[in-house]
Length: 367
Image (tube, rainbow, N blue to C red):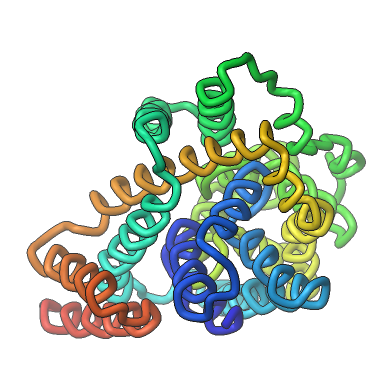
């Protein structure tokens, strides 16, 4: 399952989580929707790639420690290899392969996939008026610029306060956010050696919360401004590759690593940026059930889940504005939503169909 998702999961973290929920909860029934929501809530509170952390959590739920490693690796490695191959092409020809037609068809399908997940998860998470009000407020806060991790914390604390009728401090939640700026010590001003490359991306993987745009800010500060290893143009190309390929957006690191140090650099950068996710999930995985058993932690998890759903709604809105640009894409989005919600068609087949239709329309419309 994870290997297939690693090869076909386009659309960013929200779409990845939607596909995982469909596969693990609906089709294979590995766990309940409520437990999936708990895993998603904890993953959203950890730094690093949230969809990759959910994949690692699901591997742990299914097969223990071996499953943790296999689930994460199978989701990450195919995308990293594809990105490295694109980086090889980039260094030989100086530009990216043409992806406009494929993206034109895939994007509206991705919007429909996320909508399906929001609908299903929302039915389990929105239990009362308090949940609904906090969810709407969380979406508004995110739209006006509040950082995603702050939205999650505010949502968790708000629901805990309302439902327990007493003041809840942030100390317990803050303990879930291990941040170690010292990870990058020694990297500044150093040449592009493999050790320095590893430390830079290890720091990014341990500190970055939120979307790929937050990742872009971290990479720009370190690689363009401080170390001057790459140019602005190369950074933008790297982020573009991470967004248009399947799997986690954090494979942007693979592209940059290849540019800086070839295949060894690609492997080291990938290991550095994803290693914190494995370590954090390994440390927290056994305690997720204990968190749910605690009344205070359970209330906070409920709130964080509502906040995560609100963030998914905002992502869906933003992606929809970019993806649905004409009648063809609107038809593709609506048709995909009907096939997903009414007939439960696999999202993998819909993505493949969207890519094919996009390529055909691109050829037909070409002058």
